[in-house]
Length: 343
Image 1 (cartoon, rainbow, N blue to C red):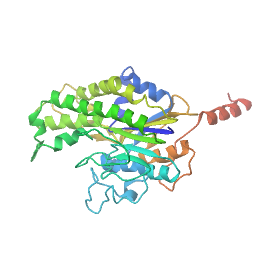
Image 2 (cartoon, rainbow, N blue to C red; image 1 turned 180 degrees about the horizontal axis):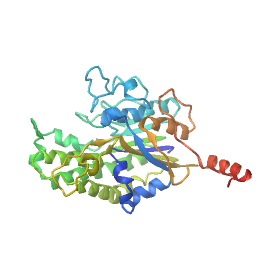
Image 3 (tube, rainbow, N blue to C red; image 1 turned 30 degrees about the vertical axis):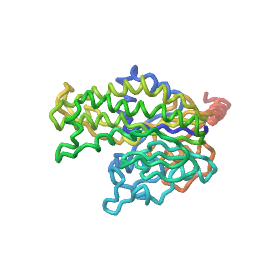
Image 4 (tube, rainbow, N blue to C red; image 1 turned 135 degrees about the horizontal axis):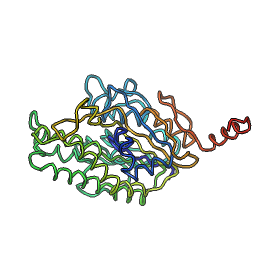
């Protein structure tokens, strides 16, 4: 496989790359240090699911692709997944002769036909699949799907959060992610494609679940977010990274505000505080001729041109730009500097 993109909704620079957690999340750190990594910023006015994931997948800001709603609804003249005119990364790769598998990437309902297959991501009113693949009956696209199957309560959200305790909710959230991992591996083995795109949402979903229980008087404990990172790093990431490709890209659509950002001047003591999104997601890419432990920052619209650059495909007319730098280029620069006496 040439490309493997791992989408982690809400993977936050403020958390996973914070100096205070240098000795935490070893599997994330190992992946980052195997290539280029850094902060990936989304647009400040669109630091949420629909617009940011669409910007990642099209290389265009929201003012161009015009999908501006949280979950891609046609609000105030905005576009939907079905009506966005900008080509998505899988469309571009198909045009260049590459087959693609797209698994639960957000705001991809209904699933589109392409050279490969697609399983639509949230918010999906029902499972939507294209391509010659088999998905287990009752497969849960995203934890939010379970929540939305229960009654809506004005001002409080959904009755799901009255039916289950926070601890039960977190276990169900983990369960939905754990069911996706072997399905991805199975499809990768049985239905070979040139590029695979997969998204996992628990690192963002945990914050929203804490908010849902805070509305019911349960203390919002920021440490539970960190514990979800612990769990994902130990239990999920090693299995996710077993899939090999020439280039592997990890990207998030936005970050999550730290306690200090949300509560300036206050001491964290587990008090009733709510979290929210931040512009700082994460980008990481490793593979052939990619220099290790190289820290570079990017914007979400830079992901698509960076991927095309890595795959040595023609650039597209998009607002993003490639941040790719190759080990061979750095070696050449160092050799030139050395011959001039600078190194």
